Image (cartoon, rainbow, N blue to C red; front, side):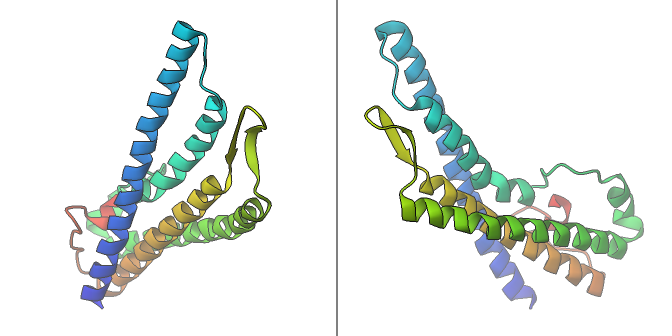
Length: 187
């Protein structure tokens, strides 16, 4: 199970990193769009249509594209004073607490995923858009799909973290690193 687990973790991590890169590129595109709009307004009195709509949709997309990587790298907000103290003295207890934390997160993200799918389906079926007809319109289904994809990769990362914690609780052995990152420390 160890080798299969590590292979699955590497694949999930690569997908997570790819989504993170897409989110970063979206930030760059957003910066260029905003600067172009500011320059167009100031120099030519010709703003770019739809910038506020695109910015609001892009921020949501960026968050969900990068949420899996944020979890993977241990950048979720939490208090780990107790957990850190248990690292050396009681690694199995730490792993058990990590399992509870990740299981709770997994449950919450699964609810979010389940609640988001009908919203995506509705926007796809109805062709829902933002903007004003005749000026600028953009479909909202790509953002709704991004929310689903981001939630799905976070579910996979959380599930793997639960399995990793269970393996440590069961075996008590120190963990190995995956791509230079100790997955347990990233939690």
